[in-house]
Image (cartoon, rainbow, N blue to C red; front, side):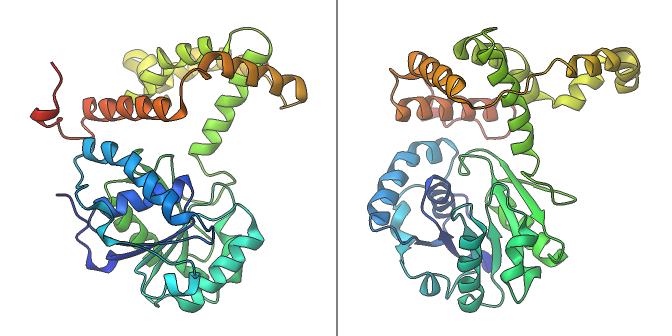
Length: 323
């Protein structure tokens, strides 16, 4: 059984029980931690329990303990009470600054002085969220890539006043959960992974909207080329290798001018009515006959197989091997 050994991270409060919060809860429970979930929605408990049951097969593939997974799970609708004994507060609330301010003012007022404060906002600067706090040095962004229980990356983003101690606390916590935390050197809107995703997807939308390819064809193009390449070596390493024995410097001197010229022809689409209609119709034709749960399970199986092949996971147990 894999467990988080640091005693300072024993009690975890998950604020917000949506897709991200549920995933964080599953991962923490599978590492043997005490987890409190807080969300004002009346159906929170039933939805979380159903969601956790669906996540169990993936946790087992990751080699984590799932027997009696919810034995250390509790629900508390009152935020103040939910954080009263927390060692870590992982907040996943709505992407609205005024809501974040309300949440974090309550958390700071009621959580223990030693608790790690982390928000999984997708774009709001942590420095802006922290303006509500009396001790802004305690807050940091802990931004996962969905789903957090599976994808290794967590972007740790300190604010202008975040202390180095908070950064190291966050790094230790996410590492203990089996994640690959990456500390950013400065705040930037959307962080790094989401910015890359947005830039790439913009061109995907442009190519589909212009009729160059369909959505299905574009997905196949990506997964059979740069998708699989970048899973092994990122863009800079790939282009370093593309430069031959002289490496990246040779690539830049010989191929960068042509690449820079190609930037002029990249698209700038908008999600206007026509584009949204086209994208929605193609998505329905391409994927509409497959239940979301089925697609997600297939994605997770493939992601685990890839991580295992790249050495990010131990080999599958012998009793789970397929003939």
